[in-house]
Amino acid sequence: MSDKKKSKKTAQAGQTPAGQAPEEPVRKEPIQEEPVQEAAAPEEPVQEASAPEERAPAEEELQQAELARQEEKYLRLCAEYDNYRKRTAKEKEAAWSAAKGETVKSFLPVYDNLERALRQNTGDEAYRKGVELTMQQLKKVLEELGVAEIPALGQVFDANLHCAVMHVEDPELGENTVKEVFQTGFKLGDTVIRYAMVAVAN
Image (tube, rainbow, N blue to C red):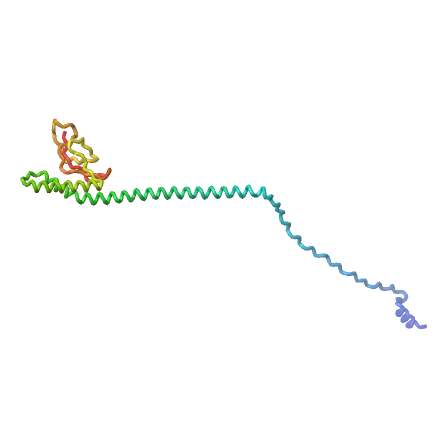
């Protein structure tokens, strides 16, 4: 048999020719895929449920604190309103007194003229009687308005009530005594509307 045929038969039989090492078949190993590790979710802190008996006192304390705060707010509002009411009433009274004082002051020249008329000697008794009645009526109106004459004649001089326009010597009178009144003074309550114009002795 020829060498060609032998080698052919050997090849068909799966045998390598003489003098050659048999080729090892290439073994394909399967590719092992590494398992993908999923990211673990962050652990949430475990909240311990508070017992109802522990939560109730805390809620009650909060309610009491809120109640105290609202009560303090209410009392403060009441105090502010009371102060506002008193201040408004005082301002209203002061404005009314000032307006009344200015109105009365405008009538004082009439009082002065009636007073001068009464000082004059006259033989007409009817005329004098009419002036006296007019003066009495005017004094009554002033009194109803709360206006009073400032005492001056024979009184010790008071700079808060009197205005000295003259000093005279009179040994019969004490020091700083009002000897004569030139113009009657008036006051409304404690407020002086017009100072008494006087002459002071010694």
